[in-house]
Length: 209
Image (cartoon, rainbow, N blue to C red; front, side, top):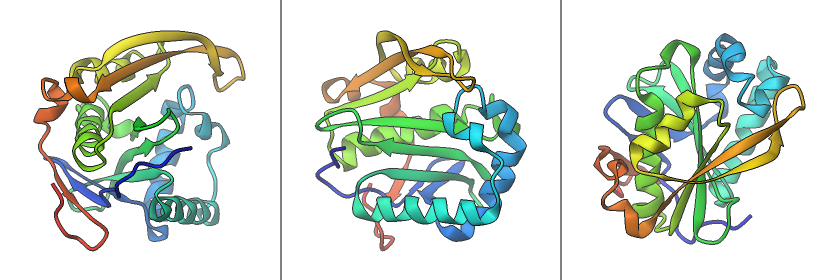
């Protein structure tokens, strides 16, 4: 895993959401969101197979996420409403796809799907990847059968580069294909992602975008 050269945005505001680094104190809100969304998430999210888990497990996981965020090895965000009283989902910038590149992942609370939130958060993190981290490539991976998820990169101007056959497994352990969507730095300025409105802040709350 290769970490980006520059530091992350710890907090990002969009028109409807707050994206921020998870804290252990978020465990009850996260558990409520996942428990409500399990059946929605299990077909697509490998980690959802092991849910539900208790609060102590959530706290341990959030502590690990926070540590990785501070170390710059992986940036996993909670998605909250603007009051930060409700978890709307989760997302992340995952540096597991090569040099100067990052993968964006996302999930949305079952009660908040079909509202464009996945597109909004993905556009916001695409902006952070290119404008804050100054990367050269952003990728999104999804199951071809997850039509709702595949519309997100398409709307934002990503290119469907390939569909890799039987590269992962589904929640039942059966092989499944993976779509690879990419956006390059030289394409970013003309993409729909560039128009997503954001404010981004560093670890001490200083605005960086």
